[in-house]
Image (cartoon, rainbow, N blue to C red; front, side, top):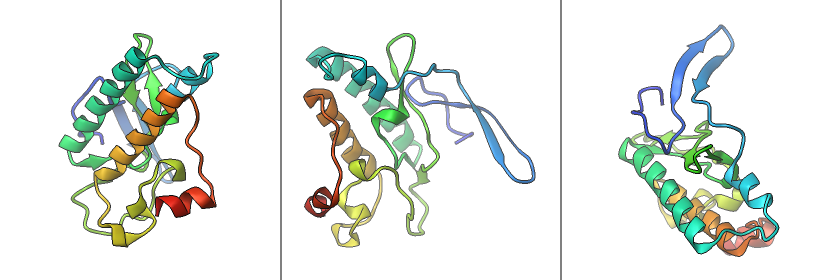
Length: 160
């Protein structure tokens, strides 16, 4: 990630260092507001069509940047999308990001509500960049409906 070129739609790493037990990385300052908190601070809990289109375009540009450089986010959700002071979105928390050229099995993913069927059942095909686009669908649902994507055993079975 430290070699990833800068994009206004992906939180960049400014510095990277480690000690004997930990690796530390310093990100650009983006403020504390997330897409999740932005939605919840509203009375209606949903975005207007214009806001939804604008926010979706920001997310798509961020994902295109990651995917162009061979990275899948693997944990895209409203809590991992920051809202800057200028109103633009930035994708953050790349702790579970995967290099798509990695041939080993992808063993960790983020929140179940935003995970596609292939992460639960290999018969749906290989896991790849599509994991992020499935997550975008869940985020769009939340922006339009004003309701969180629910996940329980029934939803898990419906996804699979």
